[in-house]
Image 1 (cartoon, helix red, strand yellow):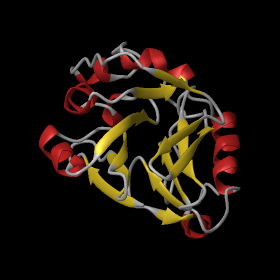
Image 2 (cartoon, one colour; image 1 turned 90 degrees about the horizontal axis):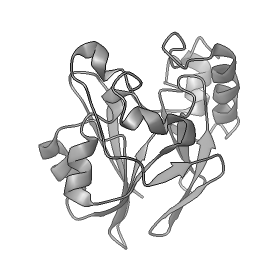
Image 3 (spheres, one colour; image 1 turned 90 degrees about the vertical axis):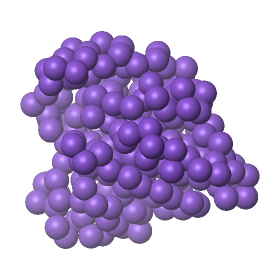
Image 4 (cartoon, one colour; image 1 turned 120 degrees about the horizontal axis):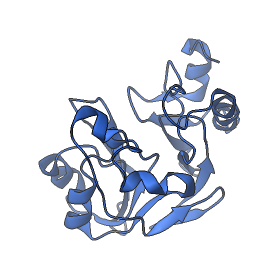
Length: 204
């Protein structure tokens, strides 16, 4: 699997490209970086889907540009769909930069499968930070993209609208139970194996 990462310098949010070199297909996850950086990430790949792990503005601030550049379908968790087009839900209104994105083409639920070349990903529903937060899991490559549910040394906030501490705890357990050899690609900060996170994350 080809994996590219780029971070937004203002918000620290990570954008990922997961690709199959053989077919040239790729998934773009959380388009939070500027169009010029997106263009560099997308070079030599055809994006077959844009995944939004949760609908907070800092993870999709350049989603309109990504859609224009790729014409790829936008996918988001069922309960987070409203956030794509409501600045008060995606919180952008509170920083004075109202963000309205294209509506979702596919609403994701727990257990959904997404194909990208020879790689198959499944959706793990992980509410708590937002009601519709989802993780993207590839069993074969042993990677999980966790959005703002789980970081290397912390977990997602639950004091924002839609947050739920009890649900977040259950969601974190689902991720950890994937196995120590899984590599976590979080929405903010560095990546880490689950075995490393168990050692350094005080919330576990």
